[in-house]
Image (cartoon, rainbow, N blue to C red; front, side, top):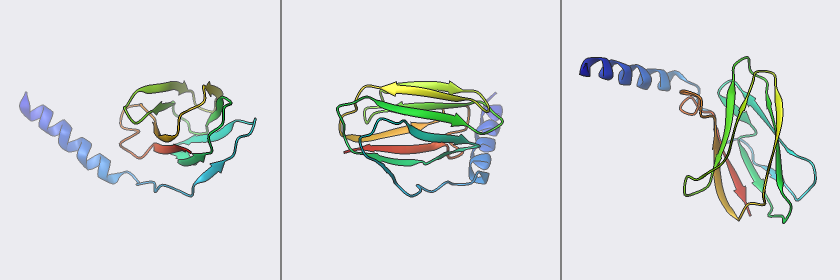
Length: 128
């Protein structure tokens, strides 16, 4: 039984090293505005994957568009790993998610589907 666990772990490590490593891309800076922050969910990446938002007393809205042919997820956590939002997005679907205003700090977003985060589907949201 231990050998099966070892083989699975070894296979996951090999597959993780085969996946392309998305770099934290150019920062998209969002000033307080009424339109949603557009995020594209691609095959194993978010576009943009690094977003800076100037703090605003108004709610924060994301428009999540899955352009891939597989189901993805958008999960946003704070620095204490508390889940603030998690939404599944079907292939070729767009959804809108609205959050209460966020406190200044760094937040992580990722896809919680099996191995998607390990494959590079993650990003950072900075609120100033």
